[in-house]
Each structure stands twice: as C-alpha cells, then as structure tokens.
Image (cartoon, rainbow, N blue to C red; front, side, top):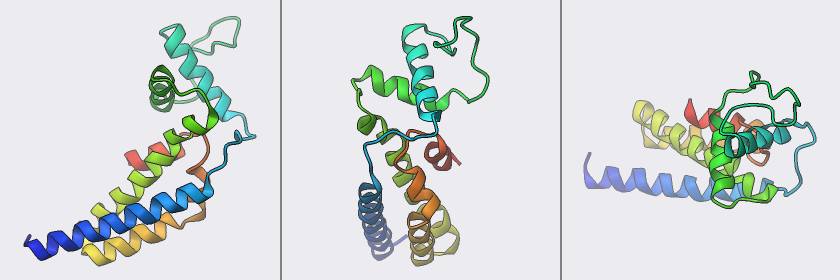
Length: 148
C-alpha cells in the first residue's frame, strides 16, 4: 500500500472511531438492564473472583454454571478485580467491544471491498439499532460480536 492509501485507511478508521464512540456515548444509560442477565453475569464474575470457580454463588448447592460461556464473566471479573464497582463502569465491557466490532468490520469489509465501501458498511453497522441497544447493557452480545 502506498502512503496515500494508508492515509485514507487511517483517516476513515479514525473518523469511524469518533462516530462510533459518540453513538455509544449517546446511547449510554447508567441504569441496570431489567432482564436480570446482567446480574447473573456479575454474580458469575464474583464467583470467579471469590471462589476461583465458575459457579452460581447465589445457589446454596454451589452448582457449576452451565448456561453462559465463561468469556464475558471472566472479562467482568478482570474489571472488578481492577476496581470497577458501578454499573456504569461495568458497562464498558459492552461499550468498548461495540467500538471494536465496528472497527473490525471496517477492516474486514475494507480489505475485501475497498476502504470506502468498508467504511460505509461499518458506519451502517454502527447505526444499527441492535448494535446500539446492546452497547450499553452488561450483556455478552457486544463482546461476542467483536470476537466474531
């Protein structure tokens, strides 16, 4: 790639980063999700930190957890271990992967279809209602979107 191409890629990527961060910031809410899965994830993270095991700490039988994969609770456990204490801070576990997913889409689509087309596809993804919705809850959807 020549210098002009690199500048285009970096410029579009930077613009996409700014747009995605702004969208995620505007969608942010500090209240917890009403569905309850977020509490389950935090409970599993707590179990990883305090018990060193992937189990339902609220269950008196201390059964091993089998409903959710351990990737997202492990990320939350790491964040809690580093000092995260509020829902707002824990929501970074969804907000940051949302931005990473948008940038990853840009790189993936751009390598196949060109920088401008990749930018357009990633921009459409960043404005997707489902992507915006899951960017501000303590749920695993954004992380798994970023990983796929």
